[in-house]
Image (cartoon, rainbow over all chains, first blue to last red; front, top):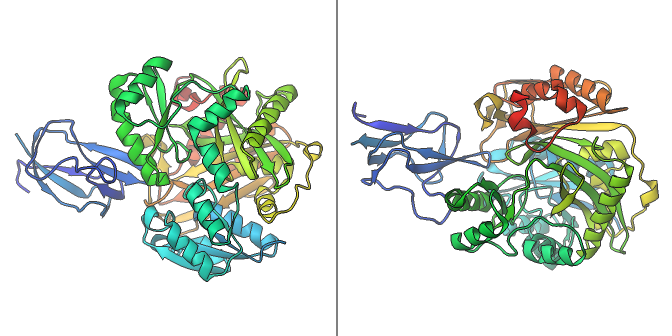
Length: 83
Length: 448
């Protein structure tokens, strides 16, 4: 992880979803440009969905977890290269 | 003829509740469990337990084929669906019927008619039951949602067609919020109920949530068990319930009860059910929805009426006639329930899964604990945050409040965040003590 990379982490133990609803297309893909405050993924914990937003504009460098994977609190989910 | 064996298609405290009813009736209980629940108490307490798949609900507790297969393998007479999961899924009730298994609940037809909000509304409007203005049909597009919202006026509320409990529910104050809310609410509904459909209603401000427990048998007999006051909510999720309601006097109880029974008859309702109403400060009431299942908060009714709701469900499903008449139903004392959730009141009620290091349960006179947790139990993130219910009974409301405060103070869970201490503040609150509450009470409690 370079100094310039911004990492999005999970605020809670749960399940990682790349789309806002099952069957819908992924919110972001690797290589995609995003704006600050864009929703990049969802975490479901105890049937509650939390939308995770990027705090910075940039390029989605790497998505570190697979769709529907279980994630721990504070686990790194995505690397963003700020623009 | 009473059942020999019942399969419980659920988990957690409600699975235990049904197992307990089975044991007290001499019925064999079969639990089902996902990979995440192999160490759960319902697996341990049931006479037998069957693994039905991976942790994710749609692969286990929402997997109809697998559950029916388990029920057939175990040769059960009936399935109790608990609440949530498949409890209000008419396809599941039908699948039980098609496989000669009795579904402990209303018929597939009743579930589907009561659950079809547009047809249900129409039926009830024709009967003169007041309903909340809203969409006559499932929302099929953002344009349709906006059209309905423009007609009834903002704010509006989106609700899941597949079930209640705050899942898939969102308020929108304008067109932009509505369009965003549609997508998240629909996703939440699909995960929670296996059904992404939503409908839309005008949002009634500062109402009370008051509901009526009913029973119907297969012979057209109906009774109601009075009301439950469920106004203490956070994000449309009930947290504290009580029976009776300090807002409901005898004439109003009779009106609500009779209305609930008219609704039940309109749907040929059988078994236990709940008719939910929104009530404004002038005692105008609007029908909200039928909960075609046992409710989380059923114990408060049990404690004031001395009727075992789950045992009644089983008897009625087995084809027994209602032995209790309306005139037999009397109300004694006051009961209150706190839902103990694995969520952090200091972090905006963020879910707080994890391992329980230790737990000390409250006890003593008038205290009932319905829970599946124990020391070292792992609260996984896969299911609802409800980890238990603390219920008290006392002779009147002030005594029930004192008893609840005492019980909450005894209750200690270490290792995860819970709502226990937060409730202590609610029971100290002056307005709560006076019974001056509405569904927004908690949002503004700190300011009052």
